[in-house]
Length: 129
Image 1 (cartoon, one colour):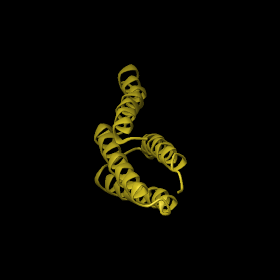
Image 2 (cartoon, helix red, strand yellow; image 1 turned 120 degrees about the horizontal axis):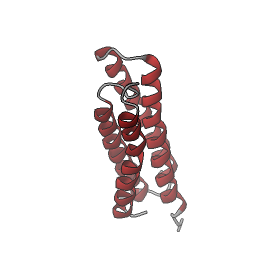
Image 3 (cartoon, rainbow, N blue to C red; image 1 turned 90 degrees about the vertical axis):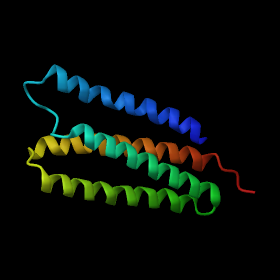
């Protein structure tokens, strides 16, 4: 997958991913379903996904033999970054644990699935010479 094609998919993915929280925030505003600073966390998750994908994709293009390692490294680095973000967020904000877990894993799960599926497309399209 080319970088331009990924960027188009990435923008569409983020628009699609933001629909559910927008609807939940506006339709059920009396329940306050989103955690404070949810949209800041959304932006950080999106930026991390973009940077990690671009680095892993670049590494896959440099060496065919290290493609699997680039995929696994991107997943591990991303997990560590997200755990640091969760730790910092929890220490600086007072939140309802259930709401935080739902919002955090909504972002984490969908960004991770998107990144892995895009990286696997790159991994499948390689031809060993």
